[in-house]
Image (tube, rainbow, N blue to C red):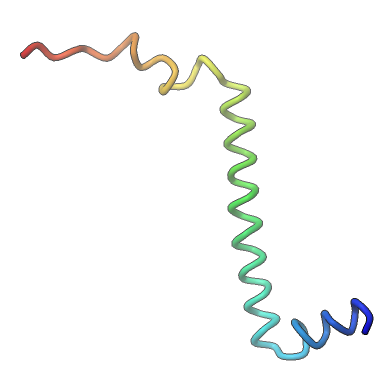
Length: 63
């Protein structure tokens, strides 16, 4: 069986499975894209983010 046949029988033959595949793919794409964008942002702004400089500005409470 060809790849097109497998895709047709497994995914696109029924509308419900095609919709679930699209929703699942969109969810996985969003999670991956978000992770990559966060990594690029944090790498580009290293040393300028709050998590990197908060030690300089936090006031320690006296007990």
